[in-house]
Image (cartoon, rainbow, N blue to C red):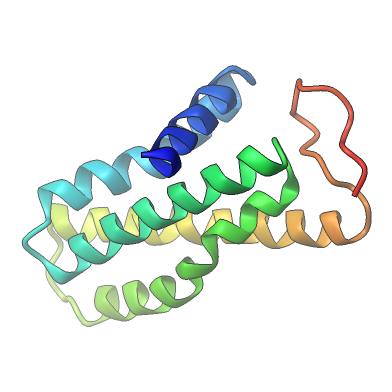
Length: 142
């Protein structure tokens, strides 16, 4: 249960950082979890929910070792495979429904997050180790 506990500790720590970060986390992960459960009978629902679980578990491990590190963005690498597939699924669906709206929402927030993640990993590589919004003190030295 360690990795699950670590993921929940990470979520708790992030929620303490302020309303904006808390809202972004909820907007990013909440619809993926809820929609994934609602549409669990579809391949897309299972893929999104499974990817969400993996990314949270990996993020929890990164956070455990380097709290509020810009490396946390690496947990979203599975989205690089998921996003093009979701876009393809959306483009092949011609009917507007709650399901396609959900897929579109998930694809958009994943794309936005991947942009932030890419910038964060680049900043980490350049020496900027901690998120600017982190209230947890100075960045640890590498």
